[in-house]
Image (cartoon, rainbow, N blue to C red):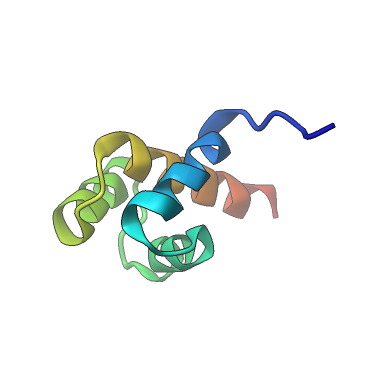
Length: 70
């Protein structure tokens, strides 16, 4: 039985479908950005890469949480 994905990662399939890039590539962009604050990164993804707010927020939240878990 497939696991039901919750939280920010639940947006990942639609992000890949809508924007045509794998989530890992988006996460690398977030990690390599000189910006560090959540909403700065969200605004940057929206302005520079055309992501919607929910998609940008999900990517940033998941990527920053991943960095804190290390």
